[in-house]
Length: 414
Image 1 (cartoon, rainbow, N blue to C red):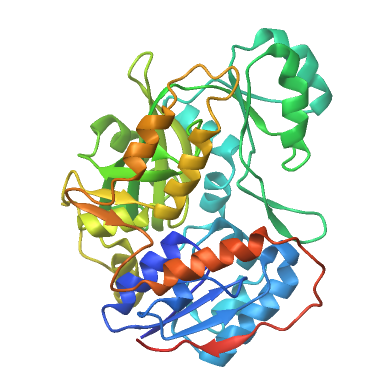
Image 2: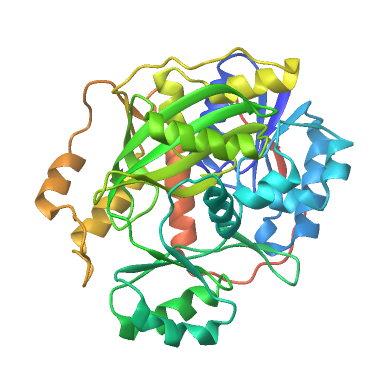
């Protein structure tokens, strides 16, 4: 079978390409950039470029359909929220060309991709969440300032936002506010890029992910990890994480959410265990493959192959056993973590923060017992080099470029 994997720049896409390509499947990696790292893997048969949804959904759909017509894959695996949202408008046209990997219903995706809707569902199920305020009008924020506890987190309601002119753009990172006097400016800075964000209490404690695969509301695979290093120590995705025994309270909450949505496909539910009372509090649902996917595969839960099997056969074997204590390191993310720590603790930050010396010493440890790298494989090194090249190109000053049709090119076999 041939499979088209989108968003080839991501770690999750690279993990999917490596997982399925090693099994002899023909993989085409596509992305809105030419340096999408997964396209340079030795396990990738071909690569393609389509217009990014950030530049317009119509252009993206037209480019994706041209890629599908050129390569005629049998299965399409979208990797990101941005791509899934952009595909929604043209799902019928896409499905006339290719079979889609299992995806939840549009209603379930709407709840998972909207943090306010997710919190609303959690409340009906009795699942603990951070105290949250949602304003109806941004002008109300000044009156709220004196009634909040600090630090407060101003979080985009959606990771990806649909614009009025038909684009899908990132909502951006959360902002942290440490004083009532700064709330209005912090709120408006997020509101300008993601309208009417959430205002939440800050939850101190460790972050966990409960990763799952569902077949029409029936759990088929489960994996849990704990964050050891975050790219931004104030809160973000992880650069180092470890497989752990599934915490029963988090598993129960994740299952309640996803089964209420009759979930179909993969999802990862994020929690923080509140250091004040030990209660796990829901952060969000990632209703697609997640960046730390390589750790699950290294630990023994091969989500990409399980999803492929579910798409091919209409069923897949259960997978609930995996190795505990496996660590996964994203080297490029760890470089970003190091840079953040070297800048020093942000003014007003109240939670634990890594020391500069300790972070440098940890960064310089190249290996360890059962440590696996997300990106840098000695047996498949070119994707890591491609990601470095892509980062260097993105750091160059931007200039306007003429519109091009998506480029199609065959990737060399190793």
